Image (cartoon, rainbow, N blue to C red; front, side, top):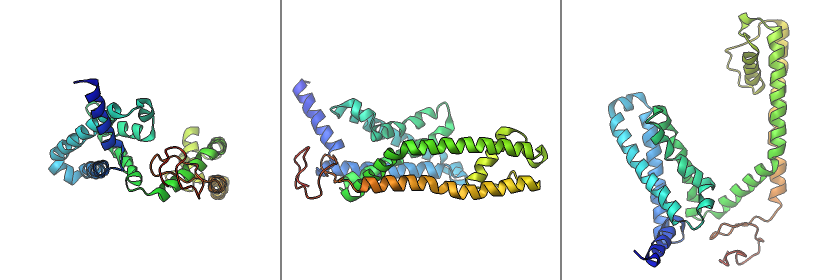
Length: 269
């Protein structure tokens, strides 16, 4: 086969797989999304003991069939795309890979096949397929706000980590092993559960001083929960003020609200 013919095949395949503007491309994406949803449903049904006992072999065979389809799709994307590195390390490129690996790992670790539910993230492509630009823009604003706030969030998490270590060690000193505080790590676990207001109840203080400290940690937990919310809210308020209009063709952002054409690809907005 000549290089020209091979190049044409790659071009046509790329239009089918990546270009949702064409009828066949849109049909391919929608069909793939349906298959993804069904494959995840198969895995969920297999995890139900009564269904797995009766139809386990059939469901596993179906799952292997879906995995074969997704494997072909993944390598077809690698072969068809122009800049392979950009696809391989993109969000959807990583999700596509993680969507097929668990099934093959199940040869060694049988329970890993349930991790194929990761492939459900591929359904997010429906926003691009259906041209839901408004939703895509809101998603980009949210991701931008989270990215701009990640340093503050990291500082906050380190502060909380230091806090639970100190409080856990303090509770270990106050309470006895009979109350369940048998070690500092277990006491730190209790501090995390209490500070996050989860409260499993598997460990609880029995002394008045320990109960007072527990009450203080619970109240402190409510105030701490509000901190990351405030950080992200500030980030959202800053990002929302910027012009983030997204081109439905190339998906590049940064256009003015009154722009008529994309400044990157020239597509009509």
